[in-house]
Image 1 (cartoon, helix red, strand yellow):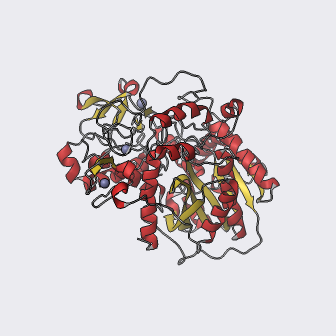
Image 2: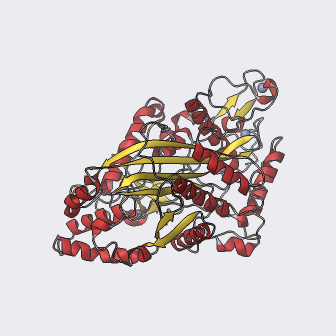
Image 3: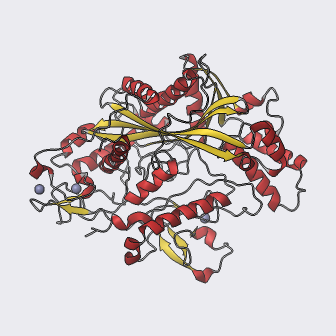
Length: 580
Ligand SMILES: [Zn+2]
Ligand SMILES: [Zn+2]
Ligand SMILES: [Zn+2]
């Protein structure tokens, strides 16, 4: 029985935080720690939820402050996992229940894009650690956590085992930014900071640590789904199947029918209405709704640029850079539930050294959208273009994208992606952006676009101070990482000339992965709004959203769990709208 599983699971999974670089000289450590699980005794877990949460925040903060990183921030998870269908089909059949038949039609099965295998392969990363599984290929020997186990402890809701464990996420190895400890792998865990410090087995041999202060563990999540009993008939259900969050529970048989959990787009939010309309023209079934949140942000210019350019930066940007952070969530109705499938996090600068910019900072998707005529990635690309189109109409002049894929298995916004979901690698992602921007240009949704090499051809970026620096984005990270590297390397004199020289490598390496977009529209941009914003303390920020999902075990690893997680998110949105 895992009645407490859910409560005690705040620390149940770790996340891999996006690292950030700071220019201060004392912050030159390697990769930041990530939050880990399973280290706290059960008794502590239930009492220390808040504390754990804070400690995770602390760790994240710590990690952000420390890390010169190469691992990245721009995630795009594209999920055209059509080759997986056979396997999913089997899963669904086995999981078939009273409700199961509708799930089969509208869920994973209906996700099946009508594509041929060749098309499917094209969208798969060439360097994936999880090679694409093609129809007819033998199935993994590792049982799917949500596969029926054949156990006799059945519940009233589904054929799944009573004790099904939650998903396992990557842990970050503290020795290397790009090093991950994947599900099922052994790793070493610091006895002093089990939540914060993990090292993979191969890095541990050479790690400069007191080896007796570390202990070996396996990266597995032992937390199980909670079950609840109907207060009238006494039948037991998975909380996830019952879509029940708090208070006493009455099952649908006793309460006389199913509820629906539909999120409507707020008709007063112009951008949400525009994006939802765009999405609904692209999907043939399952209404799409959109909810977005905006938060006013400001950073001191000092944190944006390396020491050498502090004076220039202040002259260029003033002492602070202000922007609006926008979080956009897309939902589609599946079985009378609006299920989240795509999210975008953007930064909108009304006046960055005299220019207005919309920067798409993060994208994330899970493969639960159904569209019978288009590949999901086609829909996502149209949504990105629709965002730029809308912002152009509002008066923004410039857009920016950075192709920066995640390490496979990392979660950027949605907690725990399905194992079969494929990520585009860097080159594939660059091509994907390139073609979506080309399509947008031809359709007149954007005016033009150039990659970094093309944008810098006329000498626009002769000096580092000329680089387009956005908060926690590519060039800020490159500049600060370069400074950090130079401060450590005693063989090269720390001066401006050497600094600029060492950037040349980055200019080459980054020639094609970041894009500068001219937006369409003749309207004058209204000054930065100070009212009319729509902040949300959880949903307004990618990291707080991911933290919330981790804390609540809101996963997106299966349609079943994505439904439950989405109902949780919808609850937050409706509460913020005063609808609950
Ligand atoms: Zn169930
Ligand atoms: Zn490692
Ligand atoms: Zn009942």
